[in-house]
Structures are given as structure tokens and as C-alpha cells.
Length: 568
Image (tube, rainbow, N blue to C red; front, side):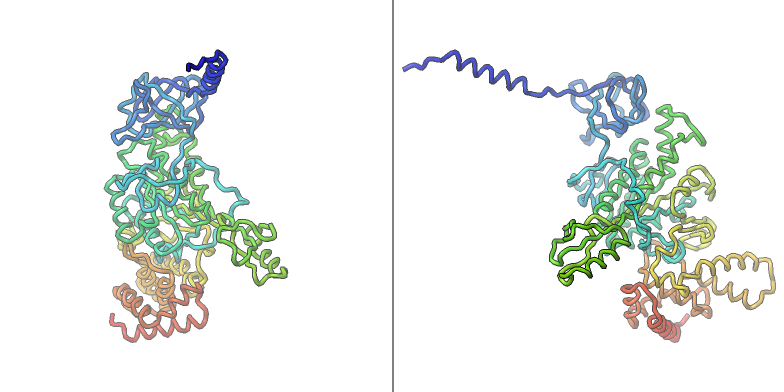
């Protein structure tokens, strides 16, 4: 039996097919054509709806994205939006891009991968892996340009970021959320200070991001090996834009590092980002700007060179800590209090405790920091000077942006004072707020800066005087020994409790009768002696962060006991 096909069935099938066809979306994109290309810059005609910092892709004759030798898509960032063309910086080799090459918009502002998957990795300025350990496992992407936290979102910097260097932690303390400039001539220990700071965070709660800008690939590899040997790569991320990379990659590298650090900051964690160095960053931006025909200013830098660094460094911040009242059994990720109230900042903590005490079931409740608050991002920019000239354009710009500077002096470096910190013009504008009570005690680092300043003055005067009174001679002897104490070998950061004990010994005259050439031996033997015979003193300083009268009396007794058996 044959079935007859009814005309209305065919009609309904055709109508359904036609409806589905019209519903299909046709993929469209805004495209343009390369007018001119060279030196990492492309001028593109078209792209009428293009946005600033939008990613662009170059297409081959078949309409496929052009890729480099590693198979990565070559992209560009739109920087200049002019009436008849778009000026873009190419993030990769431009040998395959010619006049007439088709360019298409991606409708995406430049972003990079962020998250825990980057820990222990070496990545490019675009977040691509450079260490041969496989692809990055990132669950999130973030824009490299972001708004800095406002005043209301911040909290005063008062929690120390210990560098492990006695000269810094005692004289120029750095707080979490601070921006402290490291400035000095080439090859006198700027990077070493940064690496010591990273190594000193081992076993702590600080994530470290090291951004290498315009350095040799071999130098970056040496940094990685140093950190790996110290066991520091587990909590460190290296962002590398090497000297062989195009200027656009060196230009965006610091923003990539900052964005990675902000991810941890906004989770309520602590991070430190080191920009090594911003002098080369400024040179890369100058190159890009001149090729884009932007008007040059002083030293041929563009007019917005100050904004280049200020918008980067302003993103370093200590975020306000907020508190909620929750049940003691509530999960750690709880974000809302049982009374629906959020207590903001340090004043909010006392208010929350007051409200908790007034609650009838206070025994089963507690005040807890709200997850995602109280994080910090500390910035340690590095600037290279020429002949110690801190009055040059870029150094003065960055000095005015940051919250203090650590100035390294060649004369001190070559005289064997390392780290070669000039105490006179080095300063931390956060000051003693970023020191533990034991360190800022008047018997430890409280008067150390003043004593050293007086020593420098008397030392200069003593060069021209033959007969000195006893007070002046004592000042010279004490100062010389304090300088010896502040010397420290490279990549050997010291816990703060050990710093406190040795500076206390020097500041209170226990080293005055020790020959200057035996001070380093005294310190080398003193710390093992304390660990073996008086570990309670070190543990008490580490836990309480204070040097009370009882601990001080025990410390005096310990120093006297060590001196009795010390052989210079």
C-alpha cells in the first residue's frame, strides 16, 4: 500500500526550514587594511568602531589569523584612534604583516590570565608560558588596565613587609600596600634587594610577582634559578619582556604583572610586585609613542609619561578590612553576618565587638573578617640612574609618585658596604608604622637613623681634625660597628627577631670593645649561640613582636654570656 504525500505536509516542512535558516546568525566583524607597518607599529585604515586598547588580529589570504613560529596568534593593540586611521602596536614579530594585510577587530580589550595556576611559572607580557612547562591553567582573565582603588576602599599602611635586610627593615621599613622605589646606578645591588625580599617571604603569606623589563633572557634565567634554589618559585610568578622582545611587549609587561597581583589582593591575600626596571619601561613607551607620531616633550618622552607610571603604581594599595558577626560553626567563605550588618575598617572592628557583647547568644558567635577584604598589593619599582643623578626626568617622576625611596650609592658599594644604602636620602614615608614594636623600640632601631646620621657628620669632620675628644671618638667607634652590623651577604635574608637581637647589641654598646674586623665574626657566631642556648627569647620576639622588660633583661644576659666566651 503506497502512502500519498499531502501538499500541506511539504508546505509545513519548507516553512520550518525557511524559518530556521532566517534565524541563523551571520558572523560579521569590522575589518580594516594595513596602510603602513614597521618597527612594531601598524597604521590601519577602517575599523570604524574600534576601541582604545582593543585587541586586533591580522588575517592571511585565506582569512585565517596569522601566527608566529610557536603557533601563537599575532595580535595588536589599538592605541591611536585618528580620523582616518588607527595606530596599533604589534605584540609579536611583524615579518608576516605587509601593506594591504587584512585586520579584524576582536571586540575584546586586552586581558591576561590570572590565578593560582601562574604560581611557579615564567610567562610573557601576554601571559603565555615561556618555561616549557605546558599551558597555563587559568580560570579567569582580567584587563591589564584597571581602576585604582579609591580612598574609601583603602586602609592606612601599617603592617610590615619584612625584606630580611637589616638596613631596610630597621631604617627604611616597607609596609604592605606601600610603593617603595629602589633607585641607583647600574650593577650596585638593586635587583639583589628585590630578590632578597622575595626569598624572605618563604613560609609566609605573600605572593611575589617579578616583572623583568628589557633585560637579557640569560639574566632572567639567572633570577629564576636563584629563586628556585632558594625554594621561592613556589609562591613567585615571573613576567618577562626580554630585551629581544618588541617594545610594545615591554610597554605592557608591568601592567600584566600588576593585574596578576591584583587578583590576589582582591581575594584578601597579600602580594608584592617588583618592576625591574621602569627606566627601560619608559624608554619602550617613548619608542612606541615616537613611532606613533605622538608629540615629544622633555628628553623626547611623550607628555603622558608621568601618567604612564602613576596609573600603574597607584594600583598598589592596602584594601580596607571589613568585619561580620557570624556563628562560630559558619563556613570560612560566609560573607553575610547574622545581623545583616557590615562593619567597615578598623573602627568597624571595635563596633562589631561592642555589638557582639550585647547579643544574647554571644558565646556561640564571633567577629570574623569578611572574605575578600583586607588584601594588599605592594609595589617595589626599580629605577636605574646615570652617575647617581636622581634629578633626571624619569627618576624625579617616580620619586614623586612613590611613598619613599631606597637610594643605593656606588661609593658605598665599592667600599664594601652592601646593601649600599645611603641612609641620608633614603626614606620611607610610611615610617615606623611599618615596623614591629620590638624593632621601633628606642633601644633597637628607634634611634639608629639618628646615630648613623651623626656618625656620618662626625666622620666627615674627623678627616680634618688630628685631636678628637672622647665623646667624638666614641661616636666614631660606635658608628663604625653599626655600619658593620648592617652589612649583609647577598641572598641571605634574616628573620626580624634575629635582626632585633644583633641591632640591640650594637646600639647598646656591647660591640664597642670588639675590634671592627671581628664584628662580622661576632654576628656569625652570635645567632647560632642564641638559637642553641636562648631560643625562647627569639620565639617570644617572633610571636609577640615586642621587646618587653623581661625579654630585654634576658637578652642582656644572653649577650653577656656570649661575649664571655667569644674569641675575636
